[in-house]
Length: 89
Image (cartoon, rainbow, N blue to C red; front, side):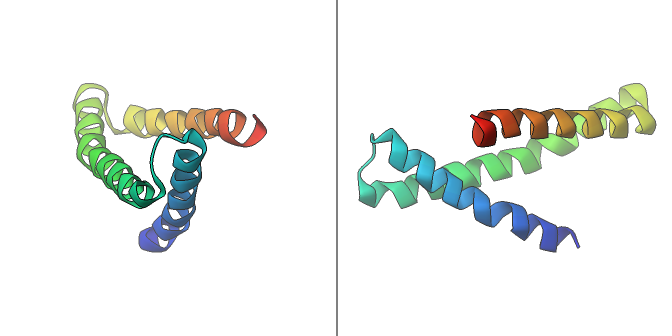
């Protein structure tokens, strides 16, 4: 289930990155795919590296309930910010 949902999130993200880099007009068309792949992979893997560390620190200091509540609230705030910054403009 996680792999299915992850693919639904990652495919639109790549097209958004390509559109954003094309709108910036600072890269040549041949560099846009390379830049998109490098940005996507570096941020995706940075999240995979940092998220367990943050969750572990929160769990050790505050317990499981606070950690899951914090992740829920931070995800909700991110979704609201994303909506107003990227969709609503």
